[in-house]
Image (cartoon, rainbow, N blue to C red):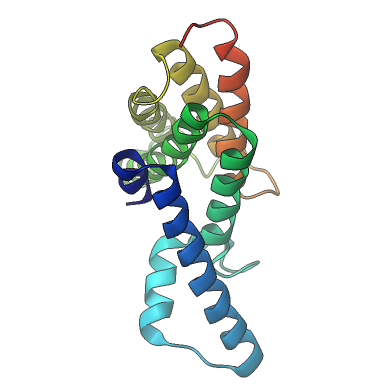
Length: 179
C-alpha cells in the first residue's frame, strides 16, 4: 500500500503513511509494555505486518525496521533511487518470503531458512518494480544486492539492510548509466 501511495501521490504522502503507522505502533507498544494493555485487534494487525521470526527477540520489530529503513533511504539517497529501494524492499522481500514458503525446495548454503526459489522470485519481482523508478541496469543491480541481503542471515533485520544496501548499490551503478 505504501508503495502505491508513494508512486501515485508522491514520496511525501508515502512518508506520512509510514510516520503515522510508526507513531501508532510505538504508542501501542508503549502502552502494552508499560501498563499491560493489549488490544486483540491491533495485535492481530501488527502480527500480520510483523516478521514472526523476530517475535521472540523483539516483538513486531519488522514494522519498526521497515520504517527506519524507508526513512533512511529517503534521507540519504536521491528520490528515484530511494523509491526503487523501497520497492525492492516491499515487493522483493514479500515475494521471496511467499514463494519460498510455498514452493521453496532448494535451501541456500548461506542461510538454510531461505530457498533458491524464493530468492529468484524476489529478484525478478524486485527488478520489475524498481524499473518504474530507475533504468533497467540500475534496477538489476539494486534487486540483486537487495535479495542477497534478504538471503543473508545477519543480526540486523533485513527490513533495514535491504533498502540501504540496494540504494547504495544503485547509487554506485548509476554513475555508469545515464538516467
